Image (tube, rainbow, N blue to C red; front, side):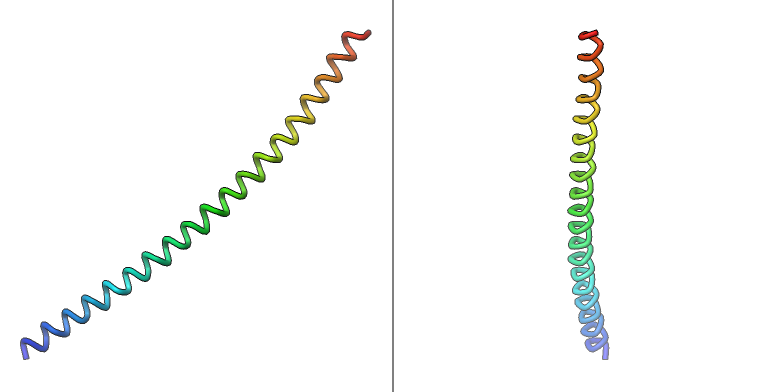
Length: 70
């Protein structure tokens, strides 16, 4: 009887370990997915910032050029 209990405890421990490994793998996949999405969002924001900054510097340049030509 005692041997059977030890065997069942061992099997339960293995099952729990297996489930923890599955949870860990799923969590790692989710972290990778979220990090990729965040990276893409940051790239979009950065690209938009560059576009806006170029427009701003061009407008400022026109103001400066017009001020010197008057």
